[in-house]
Image (cartoon, rainbow, N blue to C red):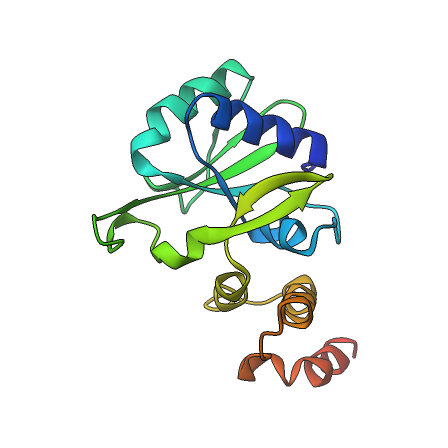
Amino acid sequence: MKGMASAEVLGVVSLLERNGIPVWLDGGWGVAALLGRETRPHADLDIAVRHKDIPQLRELLYARGYRDVPRADTKDWNFALGDDQGHEVDVHSYTLGPRGEHLYGIEYPAGSLTGTGLVAGQQVQCIAAEYAVGFRTGYELRKSDFEDVAALCAKFGIELPAWHKDYPAREADDSH
């Protein structure tokens, strides 16, 4: 897989936003945007979008050459689209109620959809830093996850989570 370079990220975000679909970067590109710099190569682009925008999103990305990527965890609200150039967009959709309460899809708290950052100098919306840190739970964390959390905590004055404090010991254990 080729991965997602900043030019393709901005192309996808621009296409969707020009067509009335607000997009929040999540995952690795969301962290990079919050930090204002690309910290590592990214295999995909994770985005959060309103569930009501999924039909139009699919139409727009299909026209750009994207197709569904078969995955065991595919759901109506969480799926991947890829093109023949190795680009992949991991779509996370949600529906919030009138008071910001979760109604459907990925459980993004309303406050998580308030971050802004930069990709290649261009401002983008992304998951807010404190939520980006908090979302790094519930799965097997990689070295890059620990590095992302440390960088976000340092930049935004967020206390390192308790689960992060043993990271250097875990890294030493992983090297044997």
